[in-house]
Image (cartoon, rainbow, N blue to C red; front, top):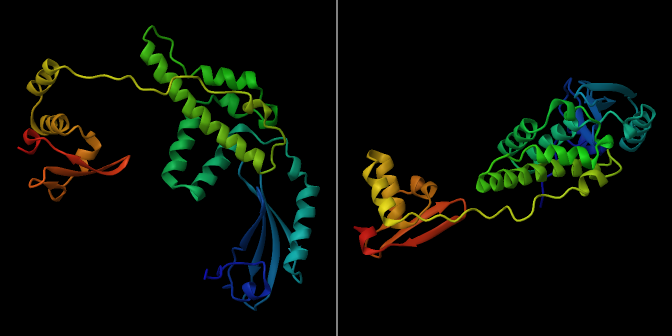
Length: 275
């Protein structure tokens, strides 16, 4: 059985269990709209509405004291509607990306949120970040996507840049879809029309000849030499080898237990590899 949330404000019993403090306890009503309850030392409380602006600043409004949750919620919603927050035309691409970062921090991990946010900001010009999401066009987004493609006679370099552009495009579309699903934006046509580049996800297959392998081993030494040699005789990824430990190797049955980005697996070794 799930435990009760110790900070819930939507029931009288829950509010009664709150610890008095200056900072209100918050309940999310909608994107950028929160209802707060400040528990006072005498056991009473005050209701507050908080709205987050597009430049990530808070605007507060006192709602009253002797209210139940439903009345306080309705009062807050009327306040938000009156101030026009439900149809805020100033919602920019920067704000959409920032909100997506906050979403990932909850749904995924802090690292994923940071890396995604940094990558989107890196590839998006300030002028585009200032554009209102409701005013974005497919042509604008296509130019943004195409600028990430390298201009080169090297077909493989171009393919890789298109593959990378597709991944960044997927991130941006996820951020924009969040604003659409949250009800901030009413139309997703601009980015729904834009698709990624086709047939660019396959990596180039490359094998070294025996002569190239011998040359590589001859020109390396120390730890990197050992790592390369281990990769050659086991076929394992270098990340798997870097995390492998002595206990993972079993000489009696010729196996090496590996763990990497594709999960755990057992590599079966040749006699030369065991030696």
